[in-house]
Amino acid sequence: MAQTVPRLLVRALGKSVPGPRRLFQHLDLAVASGELVAIVGESGVGKSTLLNILAGLDAAEAGSVTIAGTDLGPLNEAARTKLRREQIGFVFQAFHILPYLTLRQNVALPLALVSPDARAAERRANAMLDAVGLGGRGDGYARDLSGGELQRVAIARALVHRPALILADEPTGNLDPETAARVLTLFAEAVRHHDAACVMVTHSAQSAMIADRVLQLNADGLVELRGG
Image (cartoon, rainbow, N blue to C red; front, side, top):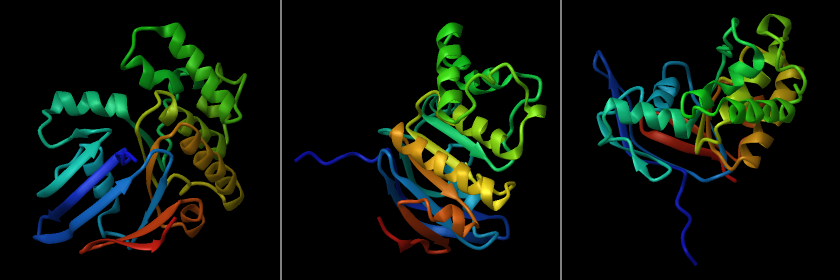
């Protein structure tokens, strides 16, 4: 039987910050299509830095990151930007929904960056808004939405271009527990339905519960707290 290639493969990653202080070393991680991995750890341990390295926004001192078969290491900045646009979706704690664009335009933005077909982008954006329970509201603006609705738009935008990898940084940090529970369920279903690999960093036990695996980040890398 052929071995499945992970959507995300990280080998022997190491990173320090000025001081010098080592954040982590010998970090290995493999995430498959449709798998959601939660990374937990104390503040300052390097969770957000790790996400930035996975996205090619920051560089590690050692190791490699491979997304959908492409090693980030040899890529120049233009190639990394192209890979981010095509292969990575982001879900941010602060939503980052642009207030001067409609919800449809916000969701379609990743498509607009990679394709000139505006009609196809609009259709895909409408379908994603339907999928997150906001069908028929594409002409609205962020000022009319609750925090949970804004996070649904952020999820739709992260998934609309069918990326290989979703990176989520405290995706429900600004939501009340009831809204967070609804959004997390939606998020997990969407990731699995679209066969994306997902890495979510969080302080929230509630958020970690939806993950297939929970890993703790420390100076020696990742320790599995709960497996699939």
